[in-house]
Length: 94
Image 1 (cartoon, rainbow, N blue to C red):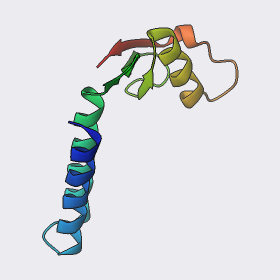
Image 2 (image 1 turned 30 degrees about the vertical axis):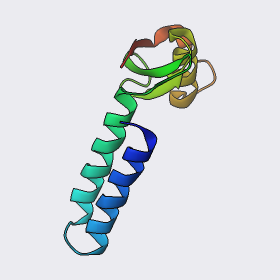
Image 3 (image 1 turned 180 degrees about the vertical axis):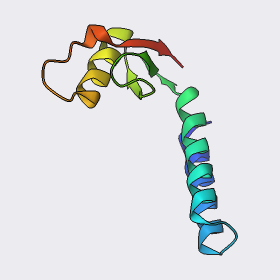
Image 4 (image 1 turned 135 degrees about the horizontal axis):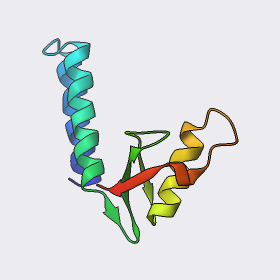
């Protein structure tokens, strides 16, 4: 899914909410599904989406150029204190 398709799908979800055809929970699910689909297909130039599968930040998804950069980003986003070691995070490409 490209960016334009993702935006159109989010717009459709919001329109359904505004028109009373969907409640907030349905709209949130629909938007989250669009975002998940977009992220799993994301690959631009030398960047792609990575998911933390173990350690601090488990489940977080970031865009990075390589696994090391992904671990750094996830560790910084999940950090409770500045002492978190990015090597404690295991990532995999989506």
